[in-house]
Length: 283
Image 1 (tube, rainbow, N blue to C red):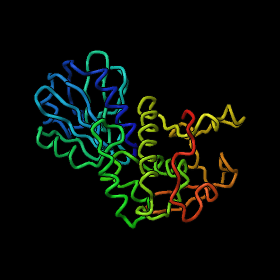
Image 2: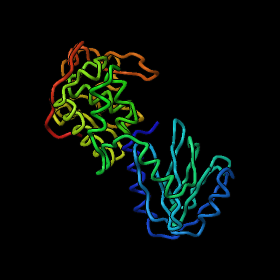
Image 3: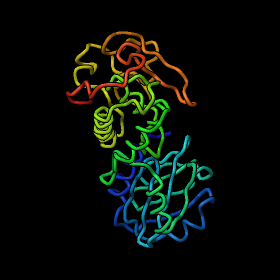
Image 4: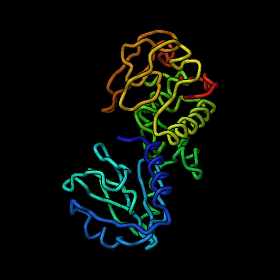
C-alpha cells in the first residue's frame, strides 16, 4: 500500500497538471460511469491528500475520494498511451495528459460535508500544515501497545506506513517492542519532526530516502540499494544484511500482520530511544 508521501506527491502532480482546467472524465470500466458523467466537462480545481486518502476537487463543489488500498494504481501519462479499458475505473484527461486509476480500494463522488468528515476522521498527517502532533502524542503516551504498532495507527500518524515506521524507530534507537507509553516526550517530539522531514523528502521525489549523508553508498563505498520502493534505508527489507552503522545483521519478524525490521544493537531491547542521532542531510 502506498505510504502518505506518494499520495501527496500524486496530489501535487494532479494539481500542477490539471488544476484550473476543464477536463474530460470517464469510466471505461463502467463502475464509476454515472459519477464520471456528472463531472465530465467540469473544471478540476485541485487535489489534496490526507494520510493515504486523496481528494480531487471540482468546481461543482464535489470531490472524488480515492483510497488506493493494496493494489490500486494511479498514473499520470500522455494522452494516447495504451490502456486496458476493462481495468480503468477512472480517467481524467485534457488534450495532452491523462490520469488513470485502476484497482482502488474505493473511488467515490462526495459532497463538501462528506469531504470534511474524511479529513476530520484521519489522524494528524506529518505532511499537512494543519497537523496537530498533540493528537498523536495523546495516543502514544497512553498506549500499552508496542510503539511499532502505534506508528501504523492512522488515527495517530496518518500516512505513515511500514517503511517509515521501521526507519524512524531505527533513527531514534528505539526498541520496536517498547510500549508506546514509555516513549519520553522529547523523543516523541524528535520522532514527529523527523517524520515531517523524511516524508517531505519522499513527497518531493516520490522515493523514500532515510539514510543520512554519511551512510549513503558513495560515502561508504557500497552498492546502491535495489528495491521496487527505491531509495536508501537503514533496516527496511534488509533482513540478515549488516547494519549500516554497527554491521550487526538486521533482524525481522511479523508483527500485527506486517513485516518489521530492526537492528538489535542500535535498537537494544527495552530502549525507549533518544532524540535524533543523525543530524546531517537525509538522502
